[in-house]
Length: 268
Image (tube, rainbow, N blue to C red; front, side):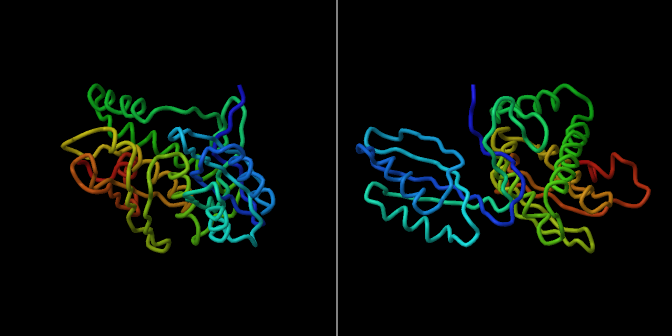
C-alpha cells in the first residue's frame, strides 16, 4: 500500500516547501477548482489529503513546492479569494523536511514507523515504574537519536550557527513532538530550550517530577554532535508537573565528568 507522508527529503536552496490547510465548500467541482488554481500559480503539489469536516465543508491539506520567488503570503490570500474557499492556513518548511514515500517509511535516513503518542508514553511509564535508573536510560536513548539526527542533517544540508537551532525546531514540529523555542550561545554553549506542547508531557498526565528525560537526551545528542563538545541538557520545568511549558537548560559538561553526568546533568 502506497501512502504519502510529510517527512524528510533534503534541502533545495532554489525552492520552498509550503503547506496549506484549506477549508472549502463541498459543491461539485470545488476541489478541482482549487487544484487547477494551484497548478496555474505554479505550485507543484507534492501530496495532499482530504478530511470531511461536515456534510457541507471539507478540509484539503496540501504540501506544495514553490519557486523561491513566490510569496506564500500572497498565494494564501489568492487561495482564500476563491469562491469555494472559506479559510486558509499555511506554513513554510524552510529546510524541506518533507517527501512522498512508499512502504517502508524513511525518517531521517532510516526506517521509521508511525505510532500514537500514548504508545510511546506507555513505554516510558513502564520504564519509570519498573526499571532502576530509568531516567538515565531514557536520556541515553534520546542522546543516540539526537546524534543520528545531527549527523544526517549535516550530510544533506549546510548546518551552521545561524540555522542549527531552527533545523532542530522544524524537525520537532514536523514529527509532532512539540514546538521549540531555542536560545543557545554557540560561543559559551549555554542556553535553554522551551518545549511547548511536548507530546510526552501532554500525554503522560500529572507527575511529581519532570518526565521528558528522553527529550533532554535528544537535545544533548544533537548539540553535542553539532558543537563537537560534550553538552549537558537537563529538564528543570515540566508541563506534567503543572507548569505551562517544559524547560531544558543547556550547558557545557564539566571537563572530565562521567558520561552519565554529561547526559543527565544533576539528578532530580
